[in-house]
Length: 103
Image (cartoon, one colour):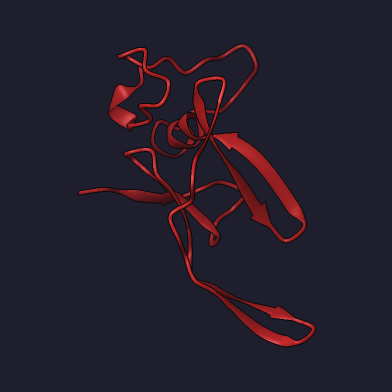
């Protein structure tokens, strides 16, 4: 069974799964014109330098993030730093399942 966890800094807006999928969540926001309902969807992943990336938005804040980093942060308690890397066991950069990372 697929497990979903909130993405740090984007709680209540986005979640990442242990299989490397990213989704937005259903939510209601208040605007000048009243309430606006957003239906959650599975996000499309874009490919850049062999890695899947997504763009996450919260208010006026927007951030492009590699999916494997999101999975590692949520499921391996990984804290991204420039000197640290996340290695894929099978050397396939698009396989972002949590079981594919070397700990």
